[in-house]
Amino acid sequence: MTEINPKTPMEKMTVGGDIYQAGNAREFKTGDWRSVKPIFLSEKCKQCGLCFPVCPENAIPVGKDQKRQDFNYDYCKGCGVCSKVCPFGAIEMKEE
Amino acid sequence: MSIRERLSGNEATAMAMKQINPDVVAAFPITPSTEIPQYFSTFVANGDVDTEFVAVESEHSAMSATIGAEAAGARAMTATSANGLSLMWEMIYIASSLRLPIVMALVNRAVSGPLNIHNDHSDAMGVRDAGWIMLFSENNQEAYDNMLMAHRIAEHKDVLLPIMICQDGFITSHSIENIELESDEDVKKFVGKYKPEHYLLNDKEPIAVGPLDVQAYLFEHKAQQAEAMKNAKKVIKEVSEEFEKWTGRKYEFFEKYKLDDAEIAIVCMNSTAGTTKAVVDELRNKGVKAGLLKVRMFRPFPAEEIAEALAGLKAVAVLDKADSLNAAGGALFEDITSAMYVNQKNVPMVNYVYGIGGRDTTEKQIESVYSDLEKIVKEGKIENPYRYLGLRREEN
Image (cartoon, rainbow over all chains, first blue to last red; front, side, top):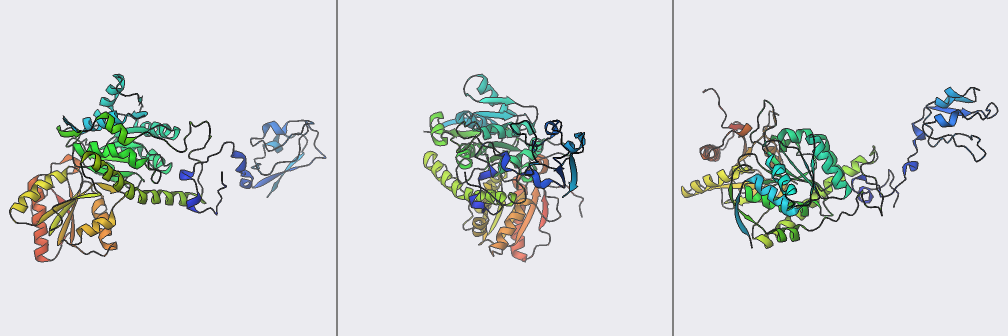
């Protein structure tokens, strides 16, 4: 399937805007909706595991070692839930 | 070989649907179109068709179920009138923007209120900019014939737009007339099988229908719809010509009745054309060069062709069976006057709003319109282009 972007002429767009492909939600990067950004302070993190289950966007990747990694800003909308649940102040919210 | 029968407009429409044998019919009863799903559900119960009939709880759901079925890859149909169409309003736009070739019978009735169940065209005029193809039918035969052509037009790959086949409530829908039916076999051969290119139930190609269409895309998708509507003109012409080869019954964008040598003419749609033809015949006997232009294809609107057909006249009256309540004139009048202006044809034109809420329109009234036109030709001026026909008023 050809990629459709804001420069695609009408003749090249699919009829009715249909998408002839499955599993394409990951291509819709909603990170640019964010106005505040979580900052991961790894030195304060105890890897307690409370933050990633509450993320509505699954934007806190967890490695095979069961340790959380830095945020995936392609999808993080900056809701701040992770920052609220963190008992150690390891997630700081900063204006974009 | 045609079969001679006598059927009402609703029976003729249900008969066409039976012969087409669609995959899904979802409908909710509303006067005067109630009989269409009523007769059709009898066909379903008797096993005459293998259609899935969905008895929905409202017209919004009727159109929604039809959209779902069509998107899934089924051939889906429905029928409604007036307030039923009003309740479908939201989904009417979804159907056309998703480019689903749904076929709907619209039995024209006044949109309330005050509450009225009788015929005018206010329901159809309310969705004239919704991106549906709209064909109007003078009588039962035309309602049947237009229905037989509907899928071929809507499902054409250059079109992919929903279509509504209009007929006048009660006047046509409930009047029994002689009709020529085609055989089941011939109908199925003409209509053909529905083979959508992309559809939801295709497990070989998972697709998404109706995704979010933000600022960067909606404009182009609307322009695609506009393009499809332009393409529909060519397709309607081709399908109608093929239909004529099969049945011998000729359909064009509009019918010109004694129009070519006419000096004065009426433009109207649906059953009023029948009354007008009778008046034209009488006037012709008296030597008055009267004619009629009956619009069959209202959407897409054949602007250039109508302007050409009316160009040689001395005065024209456009009859609107719905008032646009805009202090300027009815919808058909506005479309036709714009068509004339843009194509640089200057013919004196007047508008008559008539037949509202099922008010009878008589030959005498139509005759009075032709007399008014004769007066306009003679005096060369139009005092009030936005008039009423058959309205009670205090004497001046």
